[in-house]
Length: 108
Image (cartoon, rainbow, N blue to C red):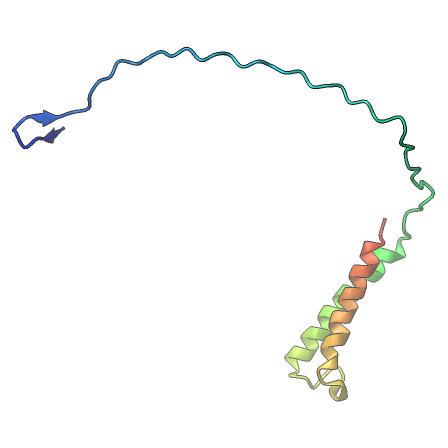
């Protein structure tokens, strides 16, 4: 409670709960979907074979090789893996990882 300037206490006014009647919403039933008859469904190719076991192995190897190439390049401050390539070493490392992504995109 709080003290009012007139000396009285200010309290929360108790309001009796009011009941209101809310109309019940109508339940609509969904229409049953019927596919159009004039459209011919596309035939999907089921003859696609799964990828060979070599694909994920090569892809992971390329990722590891690319990361290893970049780590060696950064830790050696450009002296290794190939000094004469300078910043093309970055292209080699990232190129190996991008080629792994391309391989993994074809994986089934």
